[in-house]
Image: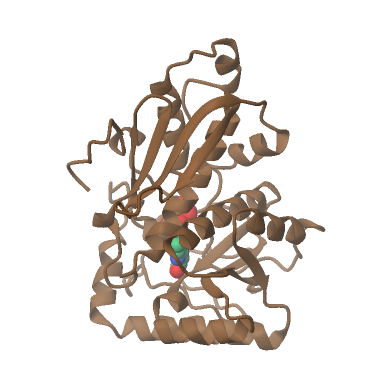
Length: 347
Ligand SMILES: Cc1cc2nc3c(=O)[nH]c(=O)nc-3n(C[C@H](O)[C@H](O)[C@H](O)COP(=O)(O)O)c2cc1C
């Protein structure tokens, strides 16, 4: 990713703070984000990095509260902290440090050092390998013990990974995703917004969901989980992808939830999401994400009622074994990292 490494940092403890910031941002940009909007920018001063949400990249129709924007930023924050750990720094984080500046998502400082663990280094290695999956999964169950680890990973970051364990609850989640997708397809403002983040084949855009990231034909799992219509009926997408031969399993159907529903909870949910996704990637497990049901208020309430404890669904995830072959693009780190607190001129 970047020229500096943990070894070089250890040899040269006075490695320049700017170099560290560049290394950290080069990793953080590989976090997942809704429609690959990459709704973030970073400012650095000394050994401190500030993560800002970029409201110009917020989905005004699908995400008017900015919940998914902050979940995406939370995923970038977790990745930034992991990059600092890979260099042997201990990140000190303040989430939403300024009540008068709600777009300042976090401040990160690095003053003290401790060797990274093998686990932290393994998670870091998977930052650029992880991809969102859109389709079915093979029939194999998750590796033994992994689900417990993923649950712990979520809880460590302040969110819960809840599994739909029986046919009935899987059917409810499937029906809610299908219904949300059908509601949104009938909403012309939503359709226009999605199209704006779905560039055509061959586009050089460094953001949005490219046709190399989804199958040309939606994969029907049993029960079905409706995909976003990124191609909008134009036949874009990867031929024959989205599943492994003959695999129509939906995977392990899960909800990522939080106990309350504040902006801080959304940032925590994003951190939990990225920790879970990276831990899964290391074990050959990919995730398909669905946020349609949390974008339609009344359907989010249906999911919430299902949970039984009134916690808040933040995202539907399906986990399973499948190669992560999808392509994804990012803006260059230099275009999202600024010296001082200067705001980027362009979105
Ligand atoms: C909050 C959030 C919501 C998302 N919702 C969906 C979704 O509904 N459908 C989907 O296919 N992908 C969804 N994704 C995955 C993004 O599209 C994906 O992260 C982005 O395109 C970048 O690709 P990558 O994850 O492969 O790097 C979501 C991601 C986040 C963080």
